[in-house]
Amino acid sequence: MFKPISLYIGLRYTRARRSNHFISFIALVSMIGLTLGVAVLITVLSVMNGFDRELKNRVLGMIPQATVSSTQILTNWPELAKKVEQHEHVKGVAPFTQLQGMLTAQGQVAGIMVTGIEPEYEKKVSIIQDHMIAGSIDSLKKGEFGIVLGKQMTDSLGLGLNDNITLVLPEATPSPAGVVPRFKRFKIVGIFSIGAEVDSMMGYIALNDASTLLRLPDGAQGVRLKLDDIFLAPEVADDIVKDLPSNFYASNWTFTHGNLFSAIQMEKAMVSLLLFLIVLVAAFNIVSSLVMVVTDKKSDIAILRTLGASPATITRIFMVQGTIIGVIGTVSGAILGIIFASSISNVIGWLNTTFGLNLFDAYFINYLPSYLRWQDVVVIVCLSLLLSFLATIYPAFRAAKTQPAEALRYE
Image 1 (spheres, rainbow, N blue to C red):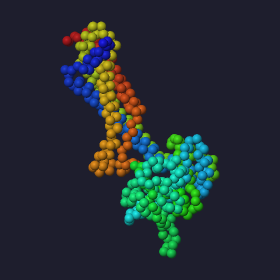
Image 2: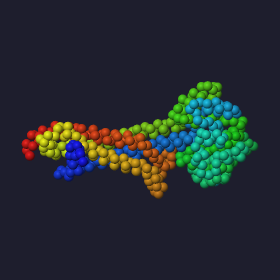
Image 3: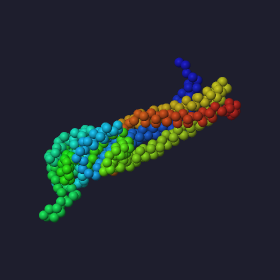
Image 4: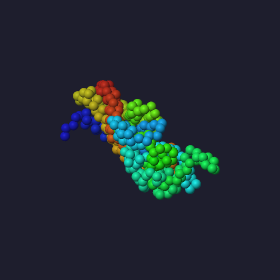
């Protein structure tokens, strides 16, 4: 089978045993460095992508992406919902009324943000229905005072479905015994599990029950929006409010979780840059190993030149040798990186559970997410191959400049 002479000799040099074992060691280190650099870069980027995705899909799937609220109770909120829904970027609208309070049960107390909702509308803007593990949000009906809580909250209070719990509001109520907080007993009609911090800080009741607790007319404080692009939330909310009376105001997710999202993006960029240095160092090792190979093979190069090999042929021989190191290291690293990225969530989760390490207490989710984006794999592999190829240019040109007479003088 025909083989170009430069490719044939380059492959022979790559496979051949060298008398100088140090050169072989440097080449091996270069290959291992590329493998580890590519594997770690793919794995870490997958974890950062996982945090990014979980923030968008889970946390921002529960909290409002954008809201339009009023300083007065909206008894005609369906009209506002219809008007807001006409915006091109709005995919769903639901009414809400929020109140803060404390839950008490079995002598334990926990703070909570309670949202009054209409289940039929809430399904259009929230992912809660997809994460119910007991009961349903459809059980929230006017006057029945049911409540839907997160699994972390119910577990911390030692409660389950159909158990009773007391909601304490900070507003004081005058009574013959003096001023006392307002209490209301609720029945747990649903439990959801998002796997994020919202499991322990959010609860849902019927919209009209929220109005009753606040002693307001039946209505809503505002409407929350689901958008086709969460990054348009500030512009969309402001655009909607400018056409409404002055008592309306807008809010969006960047007020509550914008800093967290920015931190994830910044951390992703900085970690990627630092890990890319590993690949860069491995590429420099390729330069070192090839320079030493050129020195070691000066007599071979001189013989090839005297037999008629052109400088371009000599250049390609050593470029082939360095490129092979880069290809093997990059492909091995890509395979390992894909395997690590696919299994790291289960491995870290097992370690966390088995040894009780509590690794995720400081994060907004209670597990290590990993999301492998093939675009990232392609970019990393291409950059690694490019660096490996560029690393061969200087040694290869140096080999091409070898003078046969000078190299063979002392042979």
